[in-house]
Amino acid sequence: MSQETAEELKRARRDRKEEKTLDLHNVRQHLHQIPEQGFKEVKTQQFLLNYIDTIKDDRVDIIKWKTGLFVKVSGTNSKKTMAYRADMDGLPIDEQTGLPYQSTHPGFMHACGHDFHMTIALGVLEKIMDEPLQDDVVFIFQPAEEGPGGAQPILSTSDFQSLKVDEIFSLHIAPELPVGTVSTKPGLLFANTSELFIVFKGKGGHAAYPHLTHDMAVAASTFLVSVQQIVSRRTNPIEGAVLTVGKMTAGTVQNIIAETARLEGTIRTTDPNTIQTIKTEIEAFARAFEISHHCDIDIDYGSNYYGVYNDERFVERFKETVQSSGLTYVEAQEAMTGEDFGYFLKDIPGFMFWLGVDSAFGLHHAKLNPDERALQVGVDLVHRTLRDLTMK
Image (cartoon, rainbow, N blue to C red; front, side, top):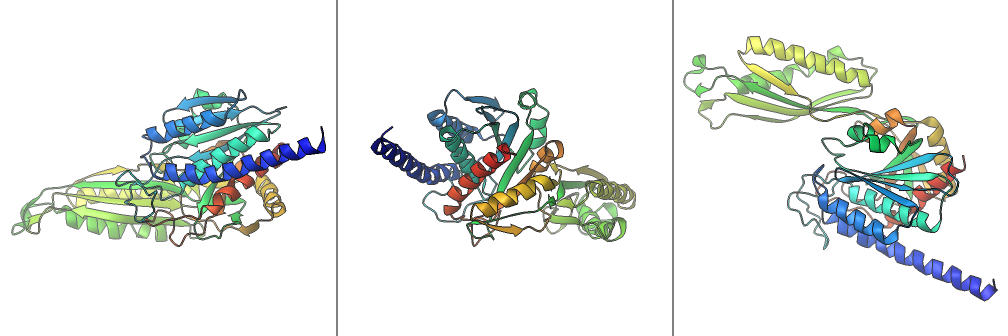
C-alpha cells in the first residue's frame, strides 16, 4: 500500500468519525423528543431498530424483548461475553427547558438522561463496527427502569439467559459533575429501594357528626407521624435507612369527614435485609391502626429495586482506563437513589459509573439540560472500557 493511499484511508476514516460525532447530537435530540412510559417505549424501540439497521453488519444479532432490545455483536475471537446496559423510558414530567427539540409527548420528559444513555450505546455500537473487539458484546436496551422495573424480568427470560453474559456495566449521567469527569466506587453505589402505597378505608359522614364516622384523614396523618419512629427505633443506626411519605390525599370537601385516604412514599436502605425489617414494622402498625381507627388498610410496595453493588475488581480496572484516557476520576459517595441495574449486578459481576454532564438542574428536574459534549466522552470511554476488559 502506497503512502498516499494510506493517507487517503486515514483521512476517510477521520471524516467518518467526525460525521458520527455530529450524528450523536442528532440521535440524542430525536430521542429526547419522544420520551415514553415504561413498557410503552414503542417509538423509541422502532427508532433504535431503524438506526441500528443503518450501521450493523452480519456480526450483529438482534432480539426483541417487549419494548426493549438485546443487540449482540460477535467478537473476532471470543472467549467471553460482555454486556452494556442502556435504559430507555422517560418520566411523567412536563418539560420546561424551552429547547427547540424538547419533548413532543405532553407530560413526559427524558429527565433522567436515558436519551443520553441510549445515544452513547448506539455510538459505541457504531464504533465497534469500525473497530471490532475480540470478545462478544451485548447491548441491552432496557425498558421501564423508572418503573415498574425492567431488569429483574429480563434476567428471567430464556432469550437473555441464552446470551450467557459474563460481565456487565452501565453508566448514569451526573448533572453535578463537569464534562470529562467520571465517578464511581467499589461496593454500594445506589441504595435498595421500594415504593410504598397505603390506602385507608373508613366511614365518611357529615363534619357535624364525627362520632358517627371513622375519619381517615386523622388515621392517615397519625399513621404518617407514627411510622417515622421505625427508622429511629427499629433499624440499626449504623446502617442507612430512609422512610419518606411524599404525598398524602384524603377527603373531598371541607365539611365532609374523609372516608378514604392514601399515602405514597418510598423506603431506601443500604442493607437489603433492612427493607424487609421496615416493611414488617409498617405492616404491624397497619394492623394496630385497623383496630384503633376502625378501618381497613391496604399496602402495596410497587416497584422494588436491589442496590447497585460494584465489583471491586472491575472498579479498579475502570479507574485505570479513566486515568489513561486523560479524564478526571472522582471517588463517588454512596447515595440513597435507586437503580434497577442492581438486579443485573446481583447475578453478573460488573459495575456502574457516573458520567459528568454539567447541568445546572439535577436528575428528574423539568429543566435538566445535559451538556452534549459528554456524548462523545461517554462513547469513547465505554468503547475503551470494553476494549480493556477484553484484554483482561
